[in-house]
Image (cartoon, rainbow, N blue to C red; front, side):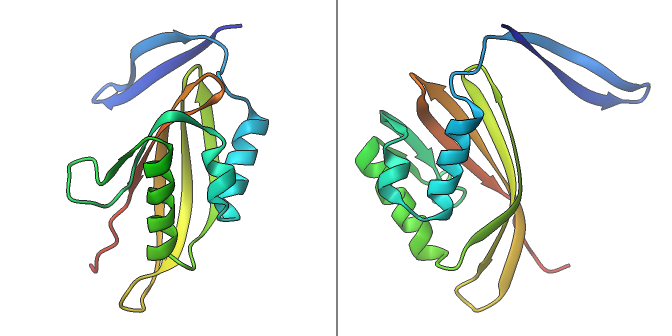
Length: 149
């Protein structure tokens, strides 16, 4: 079964279809995504790593480069997860939505945590995924930057 994805953008006349692409059946399913998100919620690095490819790439939302901080390979991916949990010890998520389109996927979620200076932060974040062979091949994180008005 093929799925179709329409990419829309607003213009002066309304919403125009910019591109329509056909996507093959998802590489992973809802059950896989539920296990993956549950492993993150439980902070189970071992379970998360079991669901990524050997050459998996993790790009954190924060870091020195335009893409944040990049971790390549299972060992480095695990290091990135540990750094995330160390930095955001009390992190929790709510309001998760996600979609899978062939070998691509995304999720949106509300992330809450305590910053190093003790402020409680709540922000929307998004992860973009590439899937291969029934596993996560890459996870790229993007987040809103919360600043004072």
